[in-house]
Amino acid sequence: MIVPIIAIDGPSGVGKGTACGHLSTRLGFRLLDSGSLYRLVGLACEWDGVSLDDEVGCTAVAAALDASFEHAQGRLRVWMNAREVSAAIRTEKAGQDASKVAVIPGVRDALLDWQRHAAKWPGLVADGRDMGTVVFPDAGLKIFLDASTEERARRRHQQLLDGGQSVTLSAVLDEMRERDVRDRTREAAPLEAAQDAKVLDTSGLTLDAMLAKVDDWADQYL
Ligand code: C5P
Image 1: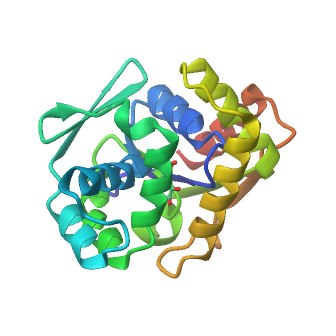
Image 2: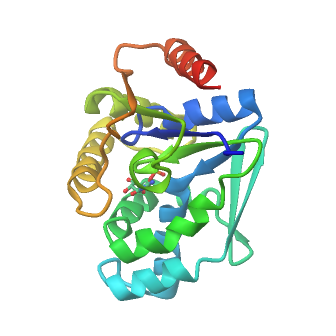
């Protein structure tokens, strides 16, 4: 029988992480946070002294990635080379570095197996940019979440403040615009909605309204 897969894509700060965490907890499904893999590759390149525009070097780092994940109480913990890097991969720099290595086709290919192996019983909720288009083109439910850049920057800014990081809203907005352009215009697996995705603009929605819509789609699918 086919493992049920719910693919949720969209730009950064749109609420994918919250929607995916909520759904995987409610349904008891596994959770794939594919962005963390790109963040790990960026960090591993820094540790190994590999420049982020060295395509061959970054691809080799991605192919040799030694990482493990644990989900506990709605929180993802991540280890690389036996060192916990849960906080280190969540900084704004780690997000920028991730989007730089994510333009390299070899890096994307090297991470495909990692991601596809996550599709196991009782089901998977996959969070990313190309879950519905490239990694799981046969996913039974594809959702694309979107929101204005300003709204996403406001949300991300609040998240960073809540997490104890001190940044200005304009710095977050600039960083988000830069990352959006890179993610949407790259040749390999650019950020876009799959043709058969259900698209939801969350700009004017409360968190509860967004989760209710996603729950509704998931219930129709399952
Ligand atoms: O989702 P997150 O912010 O952790 O992703 C970090 C970066 O990794 C994104 O800006 C994007 O460039 C890249 N990414 C990707 N494909 C995915 C997930 C993330 O290219 N499936």
